[in-house]
Length: 172
Image (cartoon, rainbow, N blue to C red):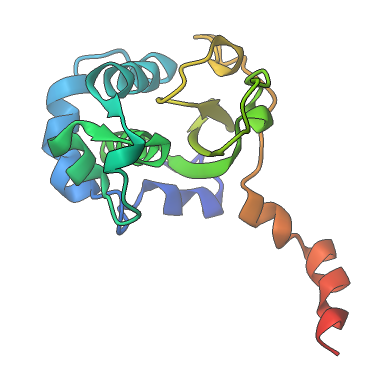
């Protein structure tokens, strides 16, 4: 873990929606024998994609990774939270991201776009995009670590120092 940037360590911790402590044994049982690195992360995404049903009608904003795992149903944020929790339980830094699907290279559709969730995983010294819900080939990095253009989380973009400086005068 010494090769991780200092701010990356937080992406190994559990959270309110990603209960790594309660999913750790399950993660190791399911993925502990998989090759490490990219292949293990892809195995996690494949598992979540194949074992869960997407259903807007059963969505709720308080749904946790453990609840999604037990119920086998959710929306993109639930797929992502579960994959993030599994990665973190296996000491793979992962962060939850959200925005629009076009942000990660999914071609536009003929229907209005909805907000979406995906994750970024720290492998080979950089962040790579994975989407356990969509599994779209344009943003699945290969075993060599080469992948799509990376996207910073919208919160990080909003609070860049130059942006904060520009917005600080708005409250006057």
